[in-house]
Length: 105
Image (cartoon, rainbow, N blue to C red; front, side):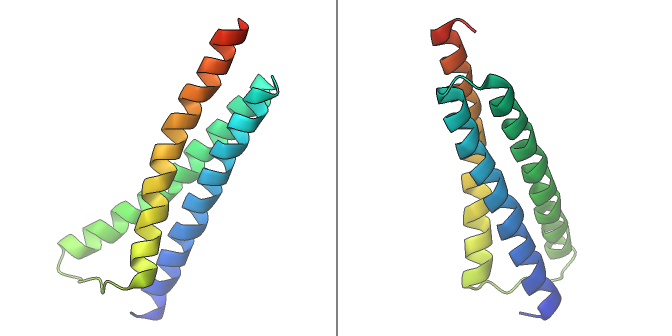
């Protein structure tokens, strides 16, 4: 894999990883009743995911225009982080909402 693609995969890992971390932290804040902090973290997670998704989309466009991507462990790891960021953000948003609902906030 060339260095540029390698860097793109690591950037994807970093963005998706930060998105996941913010989603988990949002759940912790909601559990403590800090809903504004939780919402801020969810928004940050969403923004980081959007940036990661945009990068991923560009990679897909390159692949579609005959620029083949070599699959290696780094590429698989990047895809795994992106998938988990998606799932975790959706679950975290629901959990924050549930904490609010249960506590009448």
